[in-house]
Image (cartoon, rainbow, N blue to C red; front, side):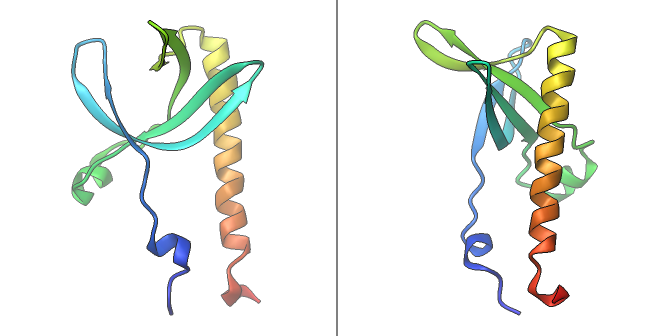
Length: 109
């Protein structure tokens, strides 16, 4: 069966971020939300090697936008309550996206 065109042409949005120790890590951007004039990002670690991806724990990374020298940067969320609240909102949205994708499966009809 042929894949839908959007799946065949899918190119993930990859960002290389630098952590506090100066280590670079690639992430795939999954979703962006704006809540109360604050922008948040949901990302997953990205690996070109499929074996590395399987070995990764797959934890969702949630960051917020912060202006640094007039440039928007992704920054950690220091407030645990804010991190938990936004993280749960992203998990719910992502879960709904996957549910909708599987509900639209033409083989189920």
